[in-house]
Length: 549
Image 1: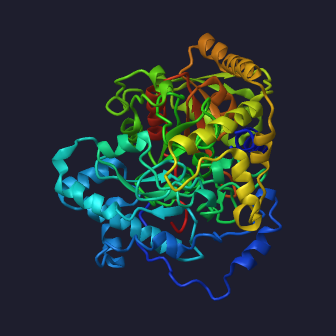
Image 2: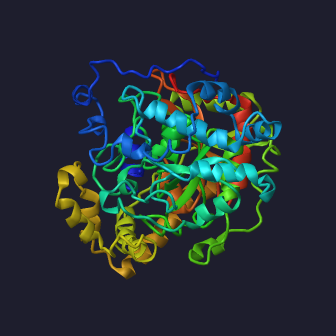
Image 3: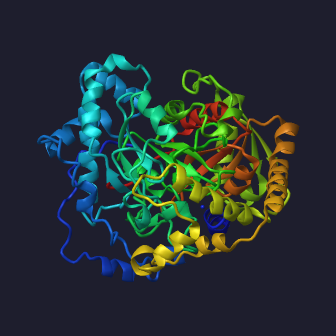
């Protein structure tokens, strides 16, 4: 069931104690990529049967070449000394350490850069989660130290990673594709909002190339620029989820304070679930999409990916804001305080809907539902009707044909020519082994899709109606605060309904693979979802760090 939902719904359709010991830096002499690829060739999941691991286009040296320029002798002893103030700490705690003088924003940025290089330089620990480190990150952090009165938002001075389909200065925006390797751009609207509030952009995270609407059945977390992202809970064993794979992996591995992902249908919730972090897919319209490489203007949205609910709320607050260039943001309510009332809901106040199909088929879901009941939550069991999503692919193909060229025309850098989908396909065909080793089946299907303008409007209206009907009657009949789901099993349905989702760590399978409880709410109910998530987090504290990271 999980593989069906992950691959066909969200991927194809759209997809702790402090460790102070020093990680061994010297790889064993017999480690090599070919040996690992041979091992993975027998993996039970075809998507885990990799063709390559390290990018053949961009080396680790290329990723790190500017990062150490301003480190000024920051050492392993500095890293270990500062670890208790940073590792696994939430934003308010880190800010308190800065206030007390235990830490500076410069220290913070250097600590994360040191940690990234420490793990990513060793092929036995590398997760291939980072595409670019911002050469200006440490300078930005120094400025924050010198100008602390400039802004009182809690995101101030915090090093943030962006999925590499989000425009930002200091790193090219590649979407993982070689054709965009020189795509130096202005800031996406959400990045401008974060920076105005004082965030430090640490760099760019790897992703499933073109947000996993490129190749067909290929590994999650693979891109030609970034290579194959790996899951720290089981390198070469568990999928990373996609398409915001690098953002999810980086959060699990403590590579930044917080990260930004993007989702069409599952691309935040999937990697958040697979990496045991907190991921929020907001209602389309709450956050601007301006300056983000698109799949579908109908369904695309950025969203925060963090290790705690408070950090998620802080990130959402930092990104939110109207955008004249993205009219859909006019639909969003204004002036919502996502942070100060986060603790206002107790778990005993919650009314939640539990899917009987999942209760029958998933023991961890059933166990967690029983735990919620024991803690005093009211849980109403319901059985949803079967739902068909015919026409979903047509929506994505139709939008991609139009939205991607619009990005090239309006938001790509000056080095990037205006291109059609067909132009990108032809470019990749010139060296397919390097640029498209898993093919480009979804691009080709999108290019060849002939759905008409009149037909697409009807399809979109019908899909929104049937998907809302999948949830709304149960929510209204039982006065539910949220629907309880698993991982990204229902991400496509929620996306088409324009409903937000919050993924929370729910525990681990017997093999150690993370699994998430996903809360689905109604449109623009992100504040309430975060309050529910915080109540769940306080009651159970189910997240565990990956061994060795």
